[in-house]
Image 1: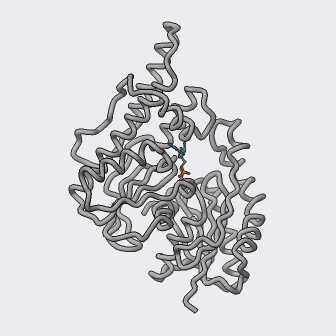
Image 2: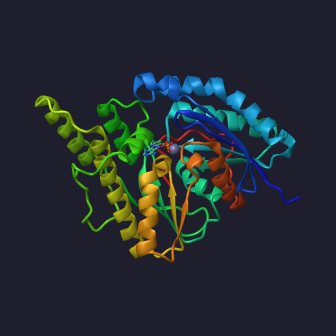
Image 3: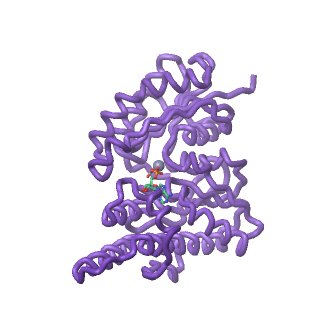
Length: 336
Ligand code: KG4
Ligand code: ZN
């Protein structure tokens, strides 16, 4: 048969996830166990706590993923796993689980870069057309990636300091919003207006790099100053102003990159791609400036970390002949 089934593992940060993906574009199962509830009280992800959670969850998720997909080990064609970037102890749990399954059932092992996975979450929204450009915005990364052809990734611009999601989470902390703060700030932003006019960093620079630490500092300084003079600031306006600054920079840099890199498609992916303001603003800008380039947005439910996206990226790598052996190790600072 030409039915290709890939079992995929993801454990790079705070979600343990196992999925079964058919032919790179059909989700038979995608089980996600999140630890957000136990990490929340620390205000971020504590690596040691994350590893312990993954160990507890991974075999449960595996059994669940196979059962929901109604497949058995002998139906599988390959096992895929995120081996970086991420927290080393967290990654190791997925890598060890995947290697164990590959060894026990004599299956090929496909190594996947977590960021390639995020890009391929968009595969579930439609076919990827090459060459493509991806705006990849997550908690750990903010980059523009050029995809000349399948399984080829070239970073053409990236953040010089904080990632966009990281800025959301740090600003959220000052606003007293639980980690991760992105979604809540997004909701709040829709009730306010851009009254603070925070800086838009590097907009005029002739490169595709980003910087969000200046915005974060401007935001925190504004809050501290108001505190000192005992002035109450409007939370919704603060959120709206912060969000507008992030969106303006992301959209402007992406439009700039599209002028230098003519592509068939723009892909929006990563945790921050769930941002409703960003999804709308990018859509509007594409219609206005690049109407012939299609915009493929990762489905809302697959913007955050999950194993389905790893399975989709693995399909392309598997077809290209990429294999790892049982010496595969976690690589916390893996790059494309
Ligand atoms: O991709 P992801 O799940 O994990 C990483 O690989 O980093 O991204 C998580 C990040 C967090 O910083 C979270 O605050 C942010 O994505 N995020 C959002 C939204 N939903 C999640 N940021 C802005 N708006 C959202 N709606
Ligand atoms: Zn991620």
